[in-house]
Image (cartoon, rainbow, N blue to C red; front, side, top):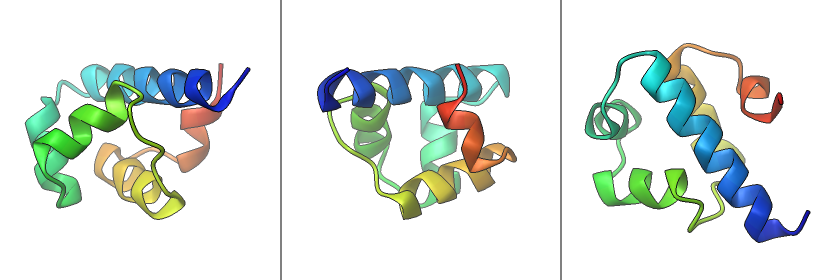
Length: 71
């Protein structure tokens, strides 16, 4: 798996976890203090989120950061 595939997979996982919590992309972005466009790029796999970004998202979703990397 290359880095592009990994980014897409991570973004899909974040989107699925967000949807499971019944949050909109905008709600999650606000909770994380991000622009909605930034959250969109993360979920679509167009950007490589930092550990700090993943930490903010995990806290907003109330899940452990490791959840993003489970299959």
